[in-house]
Image (cartoon, rainbow, N blue to C red; front, side):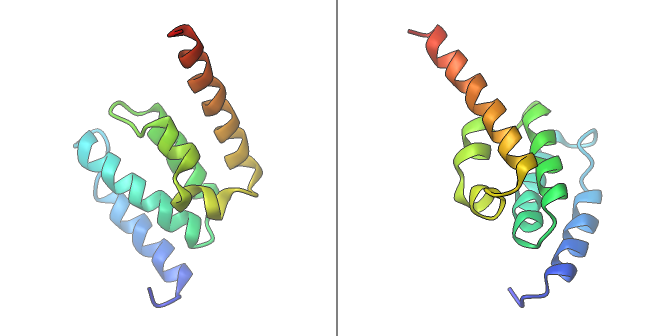
Length: 102
């Protein structure tokens, strides 16, 4: 909120380290989703996408549609190639599941 992106990124790294997924997967999922947004808007796109990839792989994880369509991820990352690769893969997976249900 103060515009100090590097401070925000440092703070979210420290916060995320306090919630290891092996200790509490549900709390980690929430913390990681918020962290990915802060990384994305704070100018740390690699960490944002790595966190989204971890959220995709986790159980419980983040819904693929949230990763691909939530503007809090999509807007700051839409021109970032690694995010676009993740997004394209998740879209293909969602389309494949959708076509199997028909």
